[in-house]
Image (tube, rainbow, N blue to C red; front, top):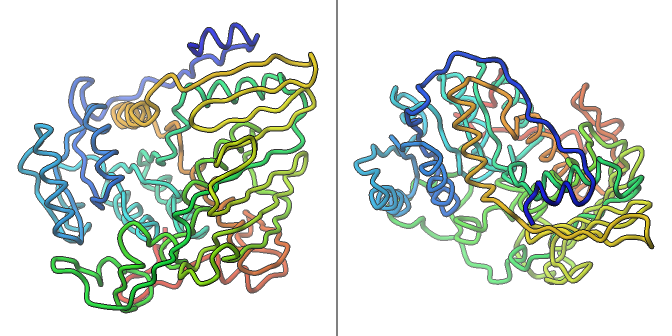
Length: 427
C-alpha cells in the first residue's frame, strides 16, 4: 500500500512539506558532491553505493587495512569512479581541497575525532550510527557542527523511510490513543563471541596502532578486530549501540520524545554463554521512565522474540498495539477502538537518506532529516542503558549539567580517556 493511500485509509492528516529559506547553493543543482570515505569496511561499500546514486563522486578513501583499501578502490572503479587517491591517515584526506564531504564508516571509537576535524576543515559529514561511543563525544560532535556551520547527517536511515514516517503519523495522530508503554527488543546471536583466539600479530598491511587510535594500547587480537570490535567497551557498545540505536530512535520518534528520561535502570551479563569473550552483555533488560510512558529495551542471543519477531518495537496504546520492524508494521486493535492496519516498506530509505544529505549540502541547510541532535538523542539513550547495566545503579542523567546525579561510577563512563598523542576535542 502506498503511503498516501495508507494515510487516507487510516484517516491521518498528512504532514505538510517543510519550507526552508532559499539559501545560496554551494554547488550547482546538477553538480556532483565530492566525498571522501573514512573507513572502508562492509558498511562503507553499501553507503558509497547509495552516495554515488544520490549524486556524489568519491575523490578520496582512507583505511588502515591495505586489503580493504584495495577492495574499495576496485568497488569504486567498477562503478565508473576510478583512480581515487588513497590515504592511511584521515587527516591527510581532509587536506584534499577537492573533498566537499566525508563519509565516516569507522568503528564507533573513531567517529568523534574525524567528525570534529572534518567540520573544522570545512567539510560536511555523514557519520554512521551510533553517533559516537560515549555521551561526551556526542556532545563534542554536535557542538562542532554548530560552531563550523557544517551539514551533518547521522546514518539512522529509518528517518527517511516512508513506512516509518507513516508509523509516526499514525501514533501521533491519536489512532492508538494514549501510549503508556513502548517495548523495544533485539535478539541476535552475533552478540556472543564463543570462539576466543589468542593475541597475535596484526595481518600484513594493517596499521593496528592507527586502528586503536585514542583507545587504550593493547595487543592485537582477531576477536577484537574487523566485524566484532563492537562487543568490547573501548570500541563499541554491543547490540545496544548497534541495532538498539536504530530501534530506540524509532521508538523515540514514534512517541515524539526529544529529551532525556527521568531515570534508567538495567541489568545484564553474559547469561546465555558465560564463557564467551565479549565484554558487552549478551542478555540485558533496560527500563526508561519517560515521564508519561515507560520504555523498555531487551536483548538476547537467542533469536526469538515477542510477536514472533526477533527484533522490533511494540507501542501499547489504549486503543490497540502497533508492532513494527523493518519488514513492516501491524496494528492490533482492542475491539473496535481503532483499525487493523498493515503497511510494508515502500522506498529505499538508505538511498533517500543520502539524497537528503546531498540536497542539504547544496542548499546549505543544516536541518538534515537526521540531525546531530537526533543522532545524539538515540545514542545517549543507548549509552544510558549500557551505563546503568554496567554500574547496576538506578541513574538520573542531567543533560544540561552533563552528569549523573549521585553516581561517580556512572560519571566516569561519560567520557573516554584518550590515549596519547590523541586528545579529546575541545570545541
